[in-house]
Image 1 (cartoon, rainbow, N blue to C red):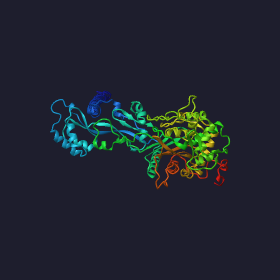
Image 2: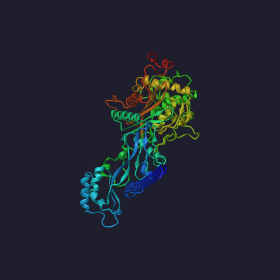
Image 3: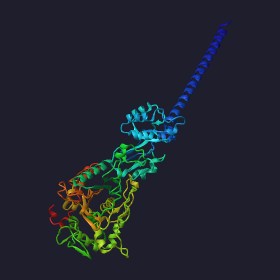
Image 4: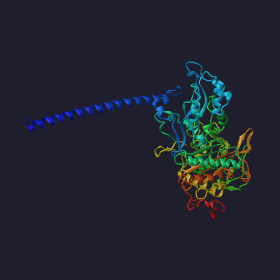
Length: 589
């Protein structure tokens, strides 16, 4: 055989061996992939089964895949993303005898099981547990239990005693902003606050992964609640209310009603609520003083009256003087608590808070124009806010011609005979200082495109004059204790007797300070109200707003100013040089 033939034969043989080896390796790889695929399918099936048993079919309930991946209810956050309300999954303790098809519901004696559960949960009542273990239907034994407690329950070996995971609502900030948030009822969903307003958004499949964003700033809210609480304590008041409002957008940065409540502890309607929660639960303070309670807010209305008169042209000269002698209209007499001299001009009337002086300005203005101004400010309607609880104002009755009687016009001018919420007042003061535009208040964070155009109530020039006079009240008048250095606070006190059977109760006041800052470029309105403050050592025995509500604002503003980007600057102020000569001794300041 030739060398070439031998070489060809060897080459052919090598190719055959290589092909056999290639086919063997390919088949081995294919078999390995098939085995791995089978293992993956088995593992996937096992995983899906575990997910089904552990998540979708727990406690006899059935959920969709979206339910497993998303919370039952979306989060609520403040304007900076701070969580105010959140869902989390927690173990619960149930007795479900109706799910046991054969045999008795309990493996062990009922008394023995009851004693075992009380050993694990000492706060439970033995008699109560024993009674529930005799039920023929599913009954809730305890709302929340820890994982280690769940292990102890599992060790009892009682299939009818189950520990499913259930969604729960938690409010990390406790009682802070409780009247804004509201709470969640297990049967009826969101209640009272924004939990109710955002019910659809918080529970829909499309929206619950996105938080509901409020206009509230948790830091500002905390400062307002803290200082209102301090004001309550110092004056021994029975309640307090406060609002901080963006004057250009209507966004509410803080809204507080005290005393408050803890939404984590509000009772549900059903009867299985544990005893320790029954002791803690309290709905007595759910009522919102800011949006649902109407008050006669007294002298805080006087700047509104003066602004309406300037706008209407009945006040053309701020030096014009009005008598402060008592005004007699029929059997009614309007007078000041103390003598203020013969006559005062409008800035002095506001600085010294004269009732007869304001009444005469309103009388000159006339009922139609004052009533129209109040209507433009929304004083005849429920407050504009998303909260479901909104009080209807006590709006004065009109004559057959549609106008108020003369005495009504005079008393409304200084905040009597008309009752509104503190939120009404906040929105009105925003229009008073922001250039004259009223906008509805909102608890939703607004983008620049979402800010409403609002409606014009006052001329821009009138608003500028009111900024000057509100600042003068704090510099020279009854609002001195609100004068936070460097923050250019302006505002007006109001102390009104509460109405009662047979007339006004002199022993019961509502003290309010309505303010804005900084007055050279107002950005925020601050309202502080105390319900029935008492004269105490801390207030020098006084009950009026100058001694209790004004100091609250004076403490709040320096706390929230830097948070909101407003730093104290004593080199700046609103220019009041043209009005100082109208005030005796004003040019010396």
